[in-house]
Image (cartoon, rainbow over all chains, first blue to last red; front, side):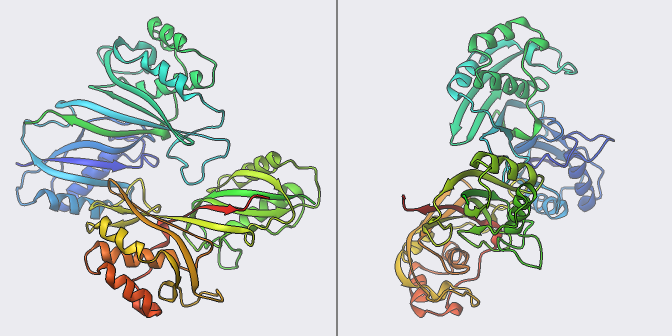
Length: 249
Length: 249
């Protein structure tokens, strides 16, 4: 009964999200279906992060168990990738792990990247892969405001109303804002995130970048512990789950 | 009779190339059609580089003349971009230039980037935007081999058989190879290039990266002045026209 850890990349655009559901194609269902196709086993693929419709991943992590032990990890990776074509999902890495490993519950840190393309012209090559913001954004102000959110806080202001997490208290280990030409990257790391937390933070930081809010306004919004005190939700197409970290062993 | 200089980005995937032709959609025709739609004038858009089917651009430069002077450069950019949607073409910049400016004949340097994704896993997010090479490539060897091509040479070995250039003698000002994780960038700059020159060079450098050829083999191939002595043509989807330089004035 080997357990496989899979590192998965996908373009979230064509999917209604990671998690299997009846409303449309999902990454989880695509993986489960192709694993069944080559192994003959009906499996459940557990992901570290249940990314929303349209959200991308370069480093989602999932695990899956097979009853047979006749497939090496490279075989699983090759078979899954061959059968996934032409879907924009690829297994970047596969390894056999202990049955104590759980992609979701063993994760000690998740990392997200949010990409804003800040320029007047619409996106041609990067369309669907970034949030296009045409008003010039002050990334220094955004970085200062983002720093106010680092640490242990009640993030109710940045939590989707339908979020199912038991507590809104989370520890944000990184929230940085960098500019690389017309590209602005917002990098966030935490043990876990609330639903829409990164997108709600980015939507709020954009108000700061435009000069409509000050960093102090972000602190005030955080302290209000009220979703309606925060900025709007940034679109899914700019968000990437870039990695999941596990403790050794 | 204002002349507009346009800087254009496009995903070359859906197009049979820059240049208007009967066999399918082209970037030139898309631009000419939308300019006619808002100005009422039948125009010719002249590009600096006639990129092939599937080749992308982040910094193509073109010029176009209008009979009327009632459109400012920002108006032209805005109208073209609004009408181009949802095509993956965008005007990044527009300015009114002298009638002595010619996008193609005034260009003193063209810059291309070729992107190789060097990893075992197929591409999901970067599909159609890079050449996927799964065998590990030695970028140091590729860089050494590329350096052999810099300078003033007869590039017949790297020239498409149907190339219409009068002479195969060109001066290559830059040919560098850099690795950034799984991404390999080949950067090339010259006053002008032969048809398929960058792709034929990249296809040859890949042989060096795989260890099938040495840098000396590349010198021998160059000196053979024979297309059949060179490596294969790298696919179009990895190539980007990134910029065109003009002398001031």
